Image 1: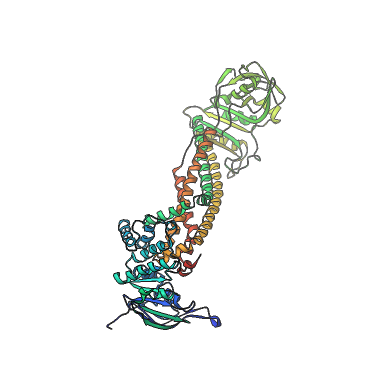
Image 2: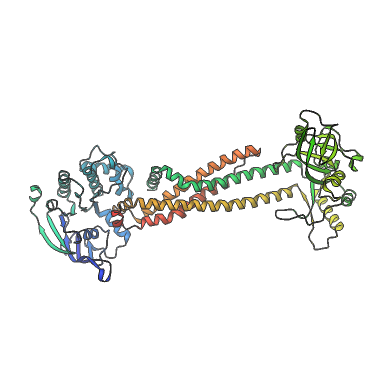
Length: 238
Length: 400
């Protein structure tokens, strides 16, 4: 075994419901993603792109097949183990930002560190550094309501990377943002991938956003319908 | 980590201060009721005990029937003059043997009238109670045999005669025209909270004939001489009365002879029973308060579903979310408990100063109230907290 992919799906299926009404959200998907990749996942709604994202994120478990993280099968993970996988390995960025309301930027960012039991001084410092990385130096004390959509998404990105995760999972990260802000957010995510070596997996339904990824996966009807490497320049054509 | 959780809980509570306050109101009222009642009860008990202690331990009370809560004495045979004579002649070491019939009647003098306690007894009563006269005299032998004469208490004097000296005046007690021969010195409130000076004392014979309509006696107060054992007197009186009342061997007394400490125990017993009842009422209100907390915590969990989803997604363990909501519920109910303790204590303080009774706080009951409110938080907070912890993060994140 010379090479272990960071993320690997082996015949992963996910069903919802039962009998005639069974919905196949994922249908025997094989997939492997290496450390350092920037993968964009596209597909119409109901194609399985969000489900695969949830499975990668440990928020959902496959009905059959096997999901391996760093070569370790997660099939028998319980809720606690899945939580620990998220806590230590994954960072989440959502379409709706999902920051805590009435809470300052720095407190939002340090939240994952709180659950790790990190001392207040250290986690404050790391939260500040993360906010600086996403270009929000000086806004640490602003509460969620005092920030624009783009700034909120930056805070969310800072919260995702403050734990130095192996993978950044972004679910429609620009879905609630205008074109200009979307571009800024995508530049930021690309830079984190390029400079920090963080693996990025992003779900989107917009071609120009997907173009930032170096690899593009297309889902149709729960199956992987396309897997192509994109030219790096594509990102700069936008 | 605990400090973090407490800070979070405090933030959630203070974010909706009015609602938090209304949520714990049930607990506040329950705890306040317990604390107030127990504190007031302690005060009156202490008052009774100090009063009884002041009266001395050489006094014995003889009543038909048995002492204690819930025991009727009405069926037992009352005493007769011959019983009093027998005690006086056959029991050694007695300083006073005072028969006592008690009732209340309207007392009229001039244009004023008042309902007062009217006691029919003999001069021995004043001896047994160590009650001095402020002016006038005690009963003459002719009066003890039934001639009309009254000794009035300080309250009766004040209400009926104002500043004037009542001795030599005539009052009407329940249609008996009664010359006032003496005035009692002021004694103040008794341990039970009634005014001992609101009293008219008349000869037993007069009371029996004109007020009681009977020639029996309802109770007897005995006072032992100094240095005489009251226990000895008590057992002497008991065997005398058993003999006179023809109570066979092995049968229970149909009378009781109690000294002050026994009476105190009986009264405290009544208070304990009352405290127990109040405790039951308080338990119900605390239960209702706990349900209130559970209800609001469930609402809070629903409102914060998304927040819970975020926390779970970014690495909060089930246990950590559970703890967060549990700590919140416990903090709420502890605030309620503390507020209830403070409210109860100030309420008790007000009532106690009104009743002129000592303010006796019990650290024990305060601790119990505190612990109980914390337990309520745990019990009623657990279900909502578990619901929060077991949310599915995907659904929770989608929740609007």
